[in-house]
Amino acid sequence: MKPLIAPSLLSADFLNLDRDIEMINQSEADWFHLDIMDGVFVPNISFGFPVIEKIYQKASKPLDVHLMIVEPDRYIDRFAKSGASFISVHYEACIHLHRTIGAIHQAGVKAGVVLNPHTPVDLLSAIIKEVDFVLIMSVNPGFGGQKFIERSYSKIQELKKLIITEGSSALIEVDGGVDLQNAHQLIDCGADILVAGHSIFSSSNPTDTIHQLRTQN
Ligand code: DX5
Ligand code: ZN
Image (cartoon, rainbow, N blue to C red; front, side, top):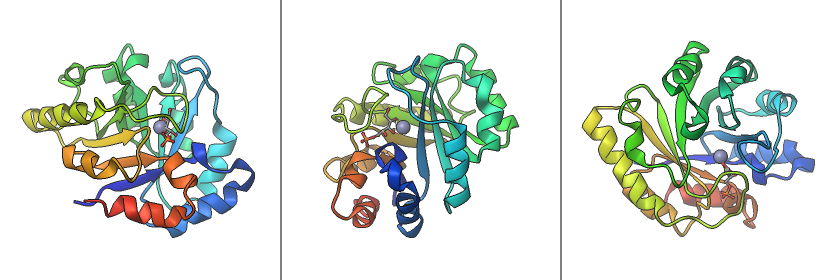
């Protein structure tokens, strides 16, 4: 199966966001990946609602909103109203994860849970049937352009096993350091959705890089 490709706008040119959104609209990409950082959960601050709402007006593909924030429950309805089709929250940021996933669904949005590199996959066994996707962080969250963590391959394999064992239909998303060198192996291990920022936006032909990521298998 071909993976879904979700370019991360964190690596876009914010002075030419209109142009970069249009490039993704015209490409074979499937989703827009939006990284929301609060400066507390991660040591960086990205962008918020006014920017997301503008992206939503221009984007012709679904918005995949990755929340790197504490207490995400406080803002779920607002992200849903801003145009999110997918919202993912960090396992490490949610004390009542089951309730948070329920609130995302209640808002009419697909729900995902994100695991930091140090968080074991088996912690998801009691929630895996409730989520639409699991995002495996293959770098420590907070910044684009970091080096891919090799241990992520076996985490994806473990997650795929868990999904099958539990009879879940969750998709597997991978985020961080994804490029044309590792995409094939990630898909082999069970990844369904590839997020890529730096490898797309720093390439000489982003549209072609998206095409190549999509046809790696
Ligand atoms: C990192 C973000 C990623 C980031 C990926 O915290 O969650 O989505 O933009 O960027 P690359 O592909 O450059 O590692
Ligand atoms: Zn992300």
